[in-house]
Length: 208
Image (cartoon, rainbow, N blue to C red; front, side, top):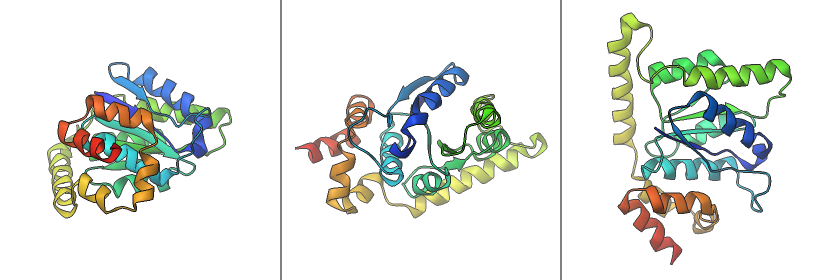
């Protein structure tokens, strides 16, 4: 599994913590840090980051995204607006575990703006640990696993049928908005190197 770390510039101070925790608890995965970091010259809103996260997933460059903003809820809502993204909100270890086991999505948003006192830091670490404690999509409770898996499959089918393609969505957005997200060069380079050829061509056309 390839996991991308990317969060809003407003929470750049938490980026290293987020990256380190995912590396620690998703030990078998390849974890790539896309920022935003404190030393990046440009700032990106949670809406812009949600589109970049969607592009990483839509291109097949990564399999899963760990993200967040101040509350975590705005990022979750924004990510779920992008085609093909099923993002959960995980303020606690149990929320993270249930999302992974029942909903089997491809992104999770964390409330990074909370005050990280000792107990807050402990909750944050336990949330990441629980998220990656077992393979995704096993269902819960176990007696209902088959039904839960079918519900999740149907949800993904409904979402897929109700949405346009990622490229169509991006083409419909305000040009200045798309031009700014294309300034996130680490994401764009990664998609060009690791993404599906069709999506990479879409990006190359916009870079000309």
